[in-house]
Image (tube, rainbow, N blue to C red; front, side):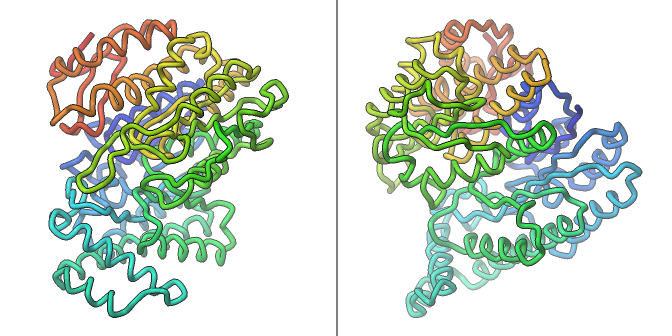
Length: 504
């Protein structure tokens, strides 16, 4: 099998890791040259990506999995920043539609497109410049507008007060950008209706409990239902992991759905608020299981006898004891960098010790990194790592859950087809442990800014060495860098990297 992948941008979690997941399934991928992809400050050129798509599809891949934000705006972040007009965006959609019609072999196309986020902060790193001054005011204004659309719960006097805090030209620009993106998504649903797209995932990142993005979510779900395509449209919390989930969905569509037991690490059963998602952890996990196309055989907590569970693998949702933590501490918000998880850690380890089937771990006790207590216990019992078909503990619940399930599905598919996929699985686990635990929870918190690769390598070295030993995996040449010159993400590459990167 050969898949053509068009990622969201050039970050390691969106560009590199989906290809690693595909390798864990024993399948070949085609991806654009990385230089064509968008970055933090430089959007991709949609025309060049479309040209690449037309050329690359001549090799007749079995399916195409496309991040439409790249084709329409030049990437996820440009989708919020780009001044491109609605007419031009619709023209780009028509270009994709025209190419499909001209294609001799009509490929199966699965797509991702994002519902524009709204962040409750003054960080304009990924937003338009005015977010630095008016971000939280726009967020509050958006919330009040959403309340007015929902059973008229909002307060019009409060709405006018909030409007007065944001200059009219900025309010207009913000609403024009939202309108453009929303109309583009409606047009993409028409492509699904007309069977030019096989399915589409509409992802929400950094979503609160209320806001205009949730109004748009509801309207898009209503449109999908009216078009009778709801079974081919997924709308859920996530973004950077969606390409991995779409790979998993394609594999399950081809080979049948693996049976998965969902196991929660404590008796809250995931009914805990998930940071950055505006909903419970359980709701996010359930949506990602559905998106990956697996068959859930039952939902359990770890007090259930592990030997009684019958499934191809278990998804262990490692939870906080009561409140989800966060390894990122933002000004003006509570410090959740050290939360209670002892009960869950004990339960998770006991389950892993007793379980007789493979396990994928969605480590969601914290946002933005692993639960350090869980990792210490795991690394003290390295035989337990041999049971793992997946692990992730990065960024949001959706990011961690979707990528963990996708890796397990990929490995299940590879095993089912007798592919040699044990080494690719270890490579994926190594990268996730090194990033989610070694970097995000150990190295990153005290950093004040980006570092040269050699300094990063020195800081990360003891954790990488420990991970390799516990996994019984010798990665060979490793290099590290911060590809967007910020602390938020790190790239841990198991192949030779640029001379500026730090190497072990």
